[in-house]
Image (cartoon, rainbow, N blue to C red; front, side, top):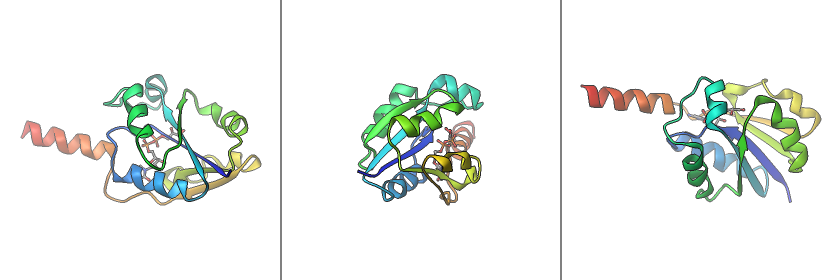
Length: 132
Ligand code: C2G
């Protein structure tokens, strides 16, 4: 069984997230998603609208996702790849090059981001709509 892993916050789920999850799954048979804990989001200077538990439940409902694990720190990727026998690591290309150290342990793939959508933009648009 070919196993794929990807990481992210996946807050306010949108088609950009769905696109990368669908394409990541195409690289294997089993997709693990490591989603950022609320504490780790703080390290990324991100405040998710949905809690970790909510984001985990939402991701587990997606047909492309086979397993959801927590992401607590930047440094856990090598052990995640080893402990889960991962063959392919996939991330959006806004991260291009940042995780090449994983090439010693698995295939590393950066996929083009979906243009024109982001959680940050959704929040901005909603604030504008509500505040006139
Ligand atoms: N993404 C995408 N297209 C978008 C928005 C996001 O392809 N329009 C991808 C990102 O490139 C990333 C994944 O969706 O691969 C999740 O995005 P975020 O939730 O913003 O994750 P991020 O904050 O980049 O966290 O250790 C890695 C970090 O946890 C990644």
